[in-house]
Length: 337
Ligand SMILES: Cc1cc2nc3c(=O)[nH]c(=O)nc-3n(C[C@H](O)[C@H](O)[C@H](O)COP(=O)(O)O)c2cc1C
Image (cartoon, rainbow, N blue to C red; front, side, top):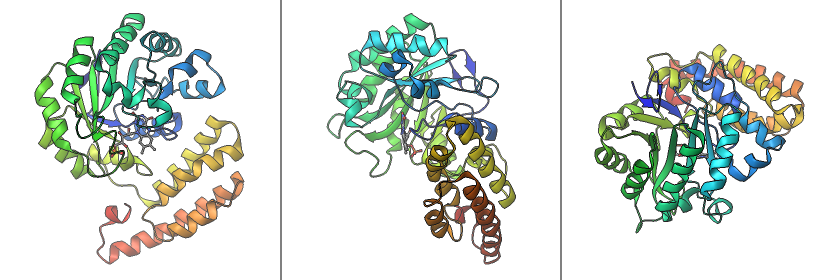
């Protein structure tokens, strides 16, 4: 079984860190479905030093379920990153993951995120400082490079390996590519071949189905597979990866309601929580008959009671349509996106 530092994971499937998505409620659901690791979304090192309400929300986790609890942080200054990681450790972080892939200007202009791909030495210093300050296992998540002329993932692997990372996740698109085009899995294969068993290689990018994940494992030899967009509205993917079933309509309805309730407890502001939950509802509804009308409705509803009622109605109706689709020999799972 794959290892991250001292932690032996139960399987090789990891939920990707996703801003505004990989919050405690969704992480707990993904763990419950079998994901072996669910890092937090990126959290600002500067923000951690101030530990305001918003940052504290990022640090909340469920100790009983999130084993190990992996905190992703971003920043460009090794000393600041080390101090921030210590704050994270005080709040229970067991693995510190460093974001070296975020393409957003607000992040890159502070030498953080994917800007670290342009400064491997600084990236290595960040890993060293955090390890020395916290004693925790440190992982990193990179892209293949800044742009097509600067695909330096092997150099990054060398520098970060020498600095002592326990795992390296790679999203094989350049910063310039953003999310366009296809993820180049050859990058994952080359990276794995290059680092051997020095540390775990986590492949990421465009895994939407069980078959995709198997193909990534077989063709690249990566130690773990990280899934982002494929798990949106479909945390059951982790269960299916471990041989389990796609959800029954009743199960889907129950989980959506449970997720909403957990989200409301998490945000502690029912109206704000309902608004923030709309994107999850759209993803859960994706591929179900009547999804666009459902989306239009929920985008106009702020009240928790009304949205709960609408979820009851929609997912019950979607149930009937999905079964009808199956009768017409349509692949049920595919119909669900
Ligand atoms: C909404 C969204 C938010 C993201 N936020 C983060 C983040 O906070 N940290 C990070 O390292 N990557 C982030 N990513 C990138 C994903 O972790 C992942 O690398 C990317 O989506 C490709 O994987 P996929 O094809 O499985 O989605 C984000 C992606 C999405 C779609």
